[in-house]
Image (cartoon, rainbow, N blue to C red; front, side, top):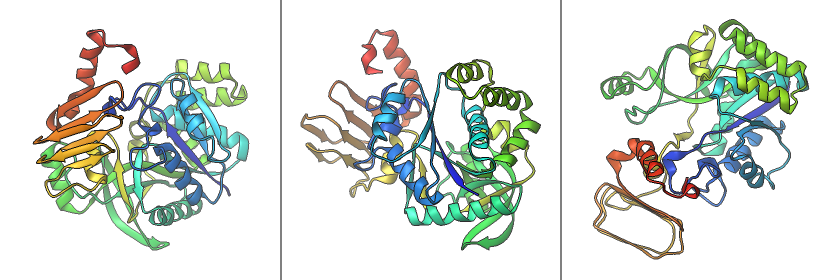
Length: 358
């Protein structure tokens, strides 16, 4: 049975403004090396799947950028979403697409904006998840042991441990919690019975489609209509025009009673905002991360300085600030205000900032 990676590459990535734009979301940025995040995701998925031809689902606005970024990454299939409808429709459409092309297959669902290392530990966890999906009618979710009480992540409540597989810990899943408050998050980390929900999954196509038919029957019927129509452009547009916008977590996972979590030993971070830079980039003695050339930094504490321009940038005495410089825009924002950046972007658009900036 083939393992086919599904790479979800939608989203705007507004929280990485001004480096990200609607046509160049965060998955098309080389945030942590020379390669873009989607290139790194595809390379990991290929290593873990044993060569299964990946399917990439991306949005219309960034499709050209995705194809350009992956031009040298080997063969892959691609579905372009005419409108973003969250993860459940994309996964349902991908599942019937794989069923039509491969018959029964194992789906490896990965997001294109995650930081994961080392690759070897990730591959080991995927192999354990695939083995579980092949042997049982389970939905397998990748859980990550929390290292901090992060309120921006969903959590998995795990029950009794299952026998280790390929040297990887496995657990029965008892429930999900979506982005708890600070007090609950601290309790979850201390309890040792909660994992971060990475949003990465493994399952057989027949198993996930049966779950869609049970929990989201209308979405299942709509996906099957697109399948019968041969996935033409018109069929895909009709599917996205009519389907419900919903996440796979709310639509399926929280309603299923056959879920297993694998807890790999790899480092994982959902790169959601500029705050993630300090977690994946080594900071100096004062906790300041500096990325890019031509930066002169002194006496900055708990800050992030990111220079993506040819300008010389002097960063002096900043305290808990994010400073980002691009060829056509500069962002200077206090770190506590990062969760509000979408609000400020809306204000900037109302002030008639050039559309090219967004």
